[in-house]
Amino acid sequence: MKWMILFLTSLSLSAGERLFDETSLKGWKVQKGEEKYWKVRDGVIVGGSMAEKVTHNTFMTTAKRYGDFELRLKAKVEGPRANAGIQIRSERIENHHEMIGYQADIGKNIWGRLYDESRRRKFLTGWASKEGPKAVKEGWNDYKIRCEGPRIRLWINGVLTCDFTEKDEKIPLKGFIALQAHSGPPFEASYKDIEIEEL
Image 1 (cartoon, rainbow, N blue to C red):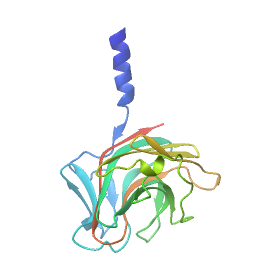
Image 2: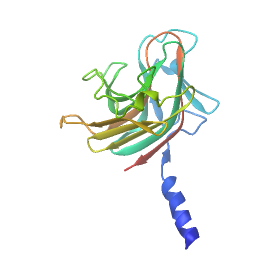
Image 3: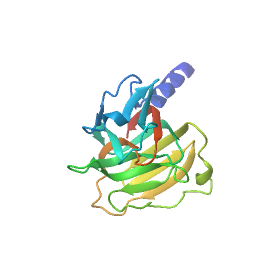
């Protein structure tokens, strides 16, 4: 009986779907003309450029829309003013490079904060705890994003950094997930071990 419990527990812990096969960008969509900003290197998705300025925000989206889910991945940024993020419940703006929707932010002093990209254009709430601003470390960081109805929570390295509940009923609770490389001087944003579990 004990082995059965262990087996079922292991199944529940690995119930997520891999969104990245570590060899290609299959299952992801990049806007025409922005392919140069996205590549796979050593099993990692890399956005941005260390060779040139990134002239505008660029996004790589999932092919599918998601509503309630838990997204888990690892991320890091390199460069003096590196800035990136993970779009959730978002849409592409027609005939534009931008996206509109929630963004789980990545960058100096903003790791684990929730920004409203191209809509309210502001951070939607403060830190969930005093430990939040100190959760990030050098190099790779574990990012967990959980969306349940109007509630969105973010964790960095196991520390809850954001707990936000949307009050505006007109704002969609479903949309694309996207990886962002922000405009700015040469930098790279890297993503790996991307897994989602729909709730």
